[in-house]
Length: 459
Image (cartoon, rainbow, N blue to C red; front, top):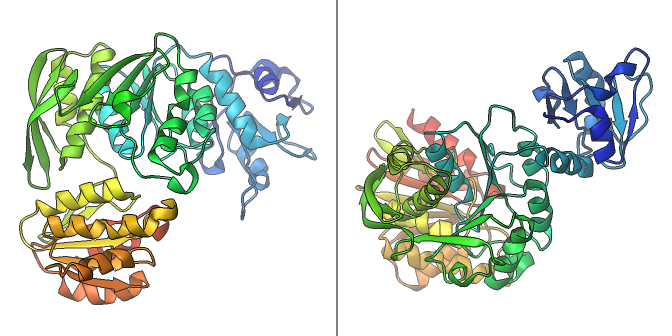
């Protein structure tokens, strides 16, 4: 990590560098990386032990030195340390301070991806586009919070030419802290949906919280906004340059959107007045929207339309995010990593395009605030509108989905359960070849177990 010596880290964290006997010359040595997981330690890394509910990272300090760590942080004085350490008051705060100091040493563009829905998928698509020209560092998985973001910044190396980072929040003030660390040159805002209403109360509150990031961007920064979103079309970007994307004649737009089953979506994309055709290997209009955001980023960073086209045509997904799995003729849409009303309806729309029987396995959506039951109830309307055949719901809130279908005399065959195991006992015996099964819920429902159980049953 460029210029991140032990002395500089101690200064950035307001910590005290302690050099045991034999390590006196280490103060000006640079760390090669920084992690909070002892299993990920490499030679000359800095270890950042954190105290969790069940595990205290300080217990692994001897282990990381045996694996070649250059130094460690510590919230406590160490007896007979096996290498240098920096004594700090709070290692979580120190991590953010280290990432902030390191970001100031970097001169590559950082793209921040923000929004209620689609951040991870959009990040993946932006990366696919940019990798046609650049070496790109991206957020791994869902490392988008006040621990994950600084760890991502600390992964940037000399060979990287662009960083694409996901930035997720659930309350006011968090985006200020993330923005201060990442200082993005470009921000992509996917939408303002119904997420984290428990804390942010309304879509206006969500907009206010997410746009805190603008205060941490350079004056020549660019904001790329979903122009089909009623809140973002009028968003105040504090004088920052902005570009809109969408399906309605924005600067970056798509026409002739053509769903092609569960595997791909075709469209004609226009960037800066020039059009080209793409076949995105993912289902749903929402993935065309993600592609438009990626096209806008690529254009800003100097890619040709041919490079953008190639990146979109080869875009992929990750486990738990609209991931299509086929086992012995049965198709599973693994979209169980997270859920909110907007993403739930989008996934149901994708399921509705499938041939053969359709089965939706849906669980509770979290952090929806006072209207949580109403928002679950409305999912029933989407299931009916898309003519879904079978609906299996699990969880207290998801019972509202079942009630909605019952009250409307829906043609959907709907069943509700208190536990996943009870649901699986009824579901597994009825699965047939050529069925298409959607699995979606918020992460705390642990629906990855459902995906695994269905795969094992079909093998």
